Length: 117
Image 1 (cartoon, one colour):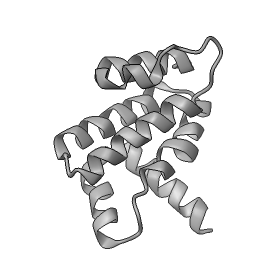
Image 2 (cartoon, one colour):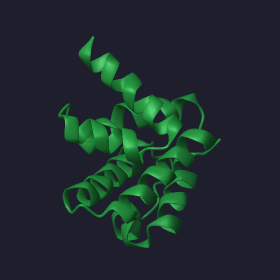
Image 3 (cartoon, helix red, strand yellow):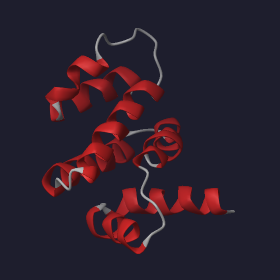
């Protein structure tokens, strides 16, 4: 299981340019700030059509889901995934379906179903 500080360290190790936005590491912070910054970083890759960086972002998001507990998984569904601003257009759905690893896509579909319900 990953703590919020371990999540921050994992993000910084994969995306060093996020370090300034995620430092200083809060002593007892939650997942909101780091996942929000990570979502913004991912969204910028979407807007810039940087598919290599986007694949890396999705791979790290998948790792967070795999290594995290239920609290981190819930935070991913309520903070990270909605903040990607992938719309329900065919292009947005194709992007998610083609580039997201299986577990991340499953979480994406789950949060979409909750929003549409």
